[in-house]
Length: 205
Image (cartoon, rainbow, N blue to C red; front, side):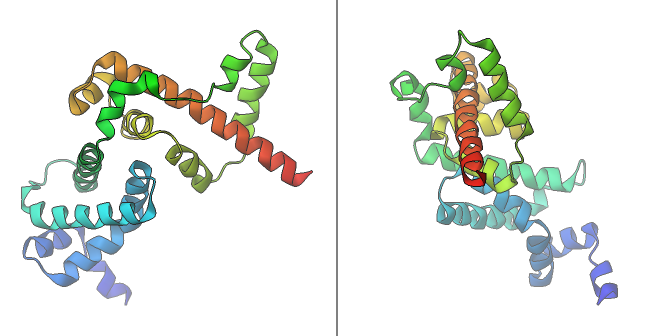
């Protein structure tokens, strides 16, 4: 069994997928499905939608694999397809429109703003969050509870390492709007993580 697995080098997987070989496509799918599903879940708040997006992404990969010329990381090329598909999914679902109405979004006030005259208590909040033992699932859940526009900018900036200029160009928004979305997303995420900390403490007491 190990011998059969070893013959599936990256080069052979790519060559097989270019010929639409089912075995090669299956190997590629099984190798990357968990990583790509996690990416899709970050951009959608619904499990079924994430699975639909993931399915569409693999179709795009199999249909466009001839465009990979061998320069640069193959996994990086695959992730670019996933991210672009996620962005297009967000646009198709009119998430972009929320950027222009961001001031109308009723956002819970972040904890640090509620206590801006109590610096010591604010520091305690940040320390509590930093020291909390969050699982990946808990963090993903908190990110997914952000408003759609906030979540999209947060994902692109924090996870995909986009610059604000790149986000603005990609989403056709002003660069200051991108910065504002990120700032609000961070504050709201801090609020949600602090609530999670309090719930954990209450359960353990």
